[in-house]
Image (cartoon, rainbow, N blue to C red; front, side, top):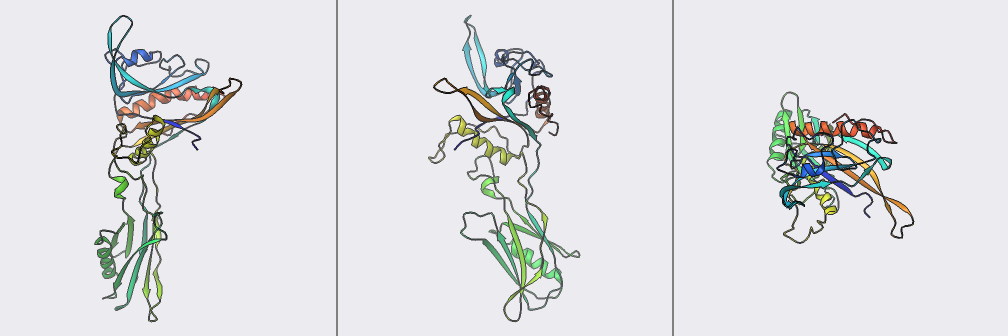
Length: 347
């Protein structure tokens, strides 16, 4: 059951027209040949009269706001005077009403981090078999825990020989889902997860973004053919999917398409809109959770439905400028709502 549909606005790294200030009408910004055109990927906040919200405005000035973003689609319209105008399509949010806002927050971009484990090798015993086993925890398709195992029989007592041999075994396996490194002298053996090609290659990847999660063990085989622990692995880097990465934005954009009528994901080729997410770019997120009031079909009661409006600002000179302008519009207005939201400043 869909309980909180959302609309997503992904900005582009475009320079805003300096004449777009408080009070400019939406009609003026639609005209691509006018003096105040809204560019493709330019985001701005509008008041209840569909004019640009003046920075510093409060609920006393307008009790309803909208998020507006220029679209890549342009078309020709003819006004009442018979004049043709080149117009840009504008994407609008649902009405955001002051009395119905539940949450106002920002999420700054954070890079993803692949999981890594480290162990400090000690002296080995010549002729003894050592077993490196990597247990993967992210493969939900597998009925049990999927493992990869690498065996090494010691030919010398020094740990450098063993470290080099295990690095060669792990990195020489094209199917291995981690990479190995060994630092002679410090005796540090490190295993680091690889990026998964099926979801980190490009915007057209079918799989949703996920990361390798694993835990390694290294044992030796004793004289009774039983495995005994050789050394302990400790976590060096915790797995983190990050925030506002292009992979996460791509998946979020795919989810948003469903609310725009794109439902076919099984019959190929699938007709979908062009991605607004830019590969290898980073995004800061501004999130507004709110209710939308409406009359019941029998016109007897007022009800509300949950909704969410998400603005993704691309990291860059122009994207940062867009973000600063939108925050100068939203922060004072949000602070004046009945909930009195704190300013979003950590973006």
